Image (cartoon, rainbow, N blue to C red; front, top):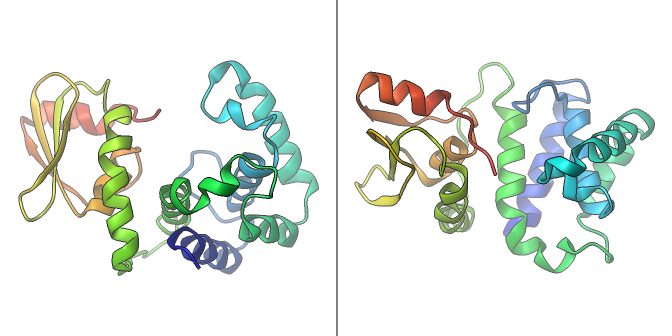
Amino acid sequence: MSVAQRERAALVDTMRGVGPDAPTLCEGWTTRDLAAHLVVREYRPDAAPGILIPFFASHTEKVQNEAAERTDWDELLTKVASGPPLYSPLKLLDPVANVAEMFIHHEDVRRAQPDWEPRVLEQKLVAMLRRTLPLMARLTLAKVPGRVALRTPEGKTVLTAGRGPAVTVTGLPEELLLFAVGREARVDFEGDAAAVQAVRDAPKGL
């Protein structure tokens, strides 16, 4: 079983545990909505472009809402657990392309629950997230109002992106990745207070 498959299985277990109506960190989405999103992403190539391209977003939203409303919860989870079908472009890329996707959405579920705590992650997962971090953060932080340096607790700067006042964000690679995609993350900030607040409040996304 690949790292992506293990994280996918862990995500499904967590969603099953909290149920279909639990909150997530994806604004306005319950776990049922999140499961529908993952199913549409992998099972509906016709609707998947709207996840990233605003022009197609209304079609994607319609298909996703239909999946959430008309598909049994256990069936949604079974499809998520099964991974991309043979006809999906993500099938061959699953071991690489879906590691960050599964991790981020797993944390979307976990961190929306009361009294959550960070997990101890397997080292292979941490290593893959660390490789993904600079690639993704370069895109998501490009327009933030600050020159953001992402730094590990050991003092290694992973990436510097954006323009404006200098802000340093320090944390474990997985926490830096969550920060870079606009999720709740356990990171520390250094810099002018106003600049730090502006960076924290800025939208972060592809």
